[in-house]
Amino acid sequence: MQISSRFTLALHIFACIEVFGGSYKITSDFLAGSTNVNPVIVRKILGQLKGADLIEVARGTGGTTIAKPLDEITFLDIYHAVECIEHGDLFHFHENPSPNCPVGKNIHLLLDDKLTRVQTAMERELASITLADLKQDAEGLP
Image (cartoon, rainbow, N blue to C red; front, side, top):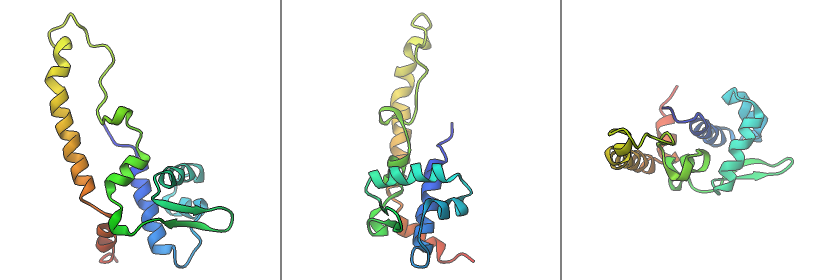
């Protein structure tokens, strides 16, 4: 299983807004140039981030800005804004395990609690990292 690239693309977008926002108008075309992703996909992610009130997008000649202080935006906020996880569950079971099989009829009893613990641990870690942390780490890069 792999988390979709929308999450890392969103983080890349925030980094670009922070680094280039004072010097350039941050548009989907500008961001597409840095991410090397189609501007349509960038616009979709921007729409999701805007819907979560994490960025502001000015129509026409405006560009994109970050809507909150960096230390108030966690990786979990961004993950929730751009990831499409069904019913809030990271793990999705196949639809119809066999009720006639001892494993199939008990698979939820065997795994549900463990998978919930895994998801909770991941979300706790994502909640502990902010965009301010990312900015601080980036300041030491060449």
